[in-house]
Image 1 (cartoon, one colour):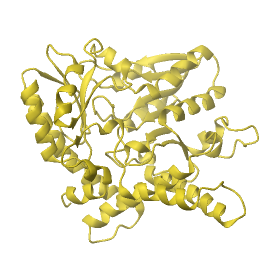
Image 2 (cartoon, helix red, strand yellow):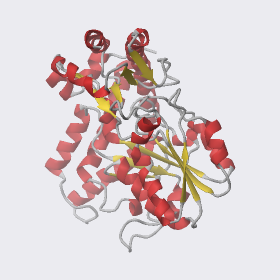
Image 3 (tube, one colour):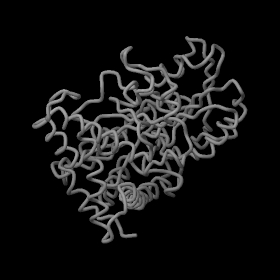
Length: 412
């Protein structure tokens, strides 16, 4: 496998060129920069096709086709079947819609299990169902490792559990969980599994069929795309879920019945630019053409993962040796265990003290709980203002990490 050509990659992102060499953007878990392909698609739609969908005239038909193509691309991106992906404004809202759609299928006294380590987007909507007769249980994290373990979930599973909600990769610590193994345990008791893949999908190609999950959530603005979220579910499960759209939108109209207000048209156009970008990366690095979009996407993400492991090791190597630093999450850069979202705390100092010291050096990192407040509280870090988080992606460089290491060495 060739090494990732980072210069080529960065040339695809106008915002990186705009701020280079001053700024090093390492706050990407909150939202990534969009490549020129995404920007071009959005601008082209606004210039040419800002019309309503579903009419007989040709401009409307073309606009309708673009939104349909966006849905088809979203399916390819996740390895889904036709009609299994709803497009919404965010994962937070998509999870709320899913919760409202599933509640009518359950009886009072049925159980949902939420994880203590998740972003609140995949906890709050489910926890709120406690006010509607659902018993909500919490899958506790392991404080010593900041992980979710199957051994801690197993005692909670019984025949009354309808749904388990968990994170594929914790947005605060970057740890990748064995979702497939957990899905098998959940399915053994007849329950379903809803996975938040927001922090995983920017770094690895998602394959919902291989994971054997039931629902999967991603945020496209963290996968180099526009501010949209995707909700995937097995088609038969989405058909069984109750419509959250207008009363005349039929229960068999998936995914539209889970897209109240419709998907944003121009941002759907931009969604297609993610595929353009991933395909351009693949074509640049491989003489032999990919056999399919999924093949191209997979080869690109393999390049990303290898480069990101180098970035992670460069930073973790420094943090592991610093006497005042405690890494929260995996200490290893092994790409099978983590993504380059790295959290740490500093002895005797609040997390909020560190990033402002780097702002004048134009090193963009962040502190806080990152909407995983329950996890930060369980780790005993709330009073220290949470964690310092450095979240890198494939367009970051080793030189940027070296800048950060030198700065941290001075201020810690």
